[in-house]
View 1 (cartoon, rainbow, N blue to C red):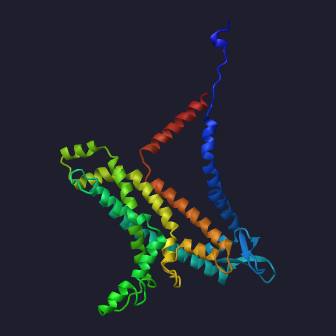
View 2 (cartoon, helix red, strand yellow):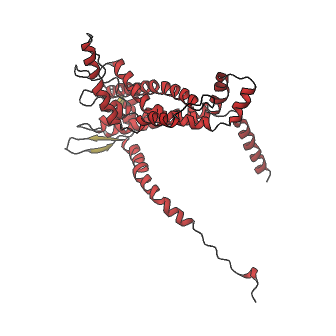
View 3 (spheres, one colour):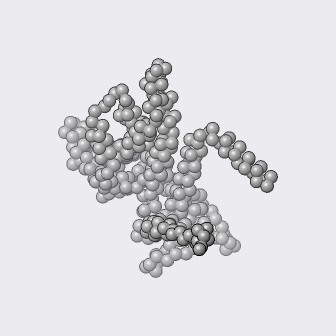
Length: 346
């Protein structure tokens, strides 16, 4: 009789079926995300020409980066040697790049700061256990609704309202009241402020709900203990709510930064049918224009995308470093040192 210990126990693994279920996602992700990313890095080293009627790529190395960052182009000296110096075309590209980068940062800061302030105040108000605000579900829907409206619809709505012509709704009212028309679309300050308002209006609801979920995750006993100790609502907000919201605030900041640096739809659609306003042209619009010109230059578009990628990575790292819990850093260093000592003694 065969003992039970000598029996071969067969185990069936179902892990492969799990990989099959997630395989479609990775295929789609690789095709639509990974491949375009690597292709962008490749195109950043190319120069596209259309002299033959079709786009021809020529490898130029880092020439595109030298043009958009330093305004340097490839030329030859009297002896025929290749040198890099400031040229008119490269300088124009550099000036355009830094102009649109400045516009992007201005538009992002201009809508993120009021957005986070309004969202934080609304989140604290709606989650306050003592106020007992009625109709929270209704207000959540109303605040989040602009976020689900397409950017094209929002841009069309505001262009109809704030058109520069006398037939725009707001300018028509101003004319009837005896005032001059205001260049809401072509003006420097007016167009920037209006785009900031649109962006804030579209995204503050999403940010409010995110912050509300963070506040609702805080242990209520902390607020009860603060009330017993005589802490005012303001002290509770700044001493309990804000510090414990650091993780969700960091998430909101990073996602808003990524979306802000890639801002395209509203600044571009707000100028549809008119000349592009140079004060509201963002870096994403700059990339799109160079990629879809009659004589496209894929190299400039791709190199600007790579620079934007690097800037986003640097700013994201700074956000994580600034908001990192300082108490965990010494512990992590001590743990790493102890592990090295332990391994060294083996």
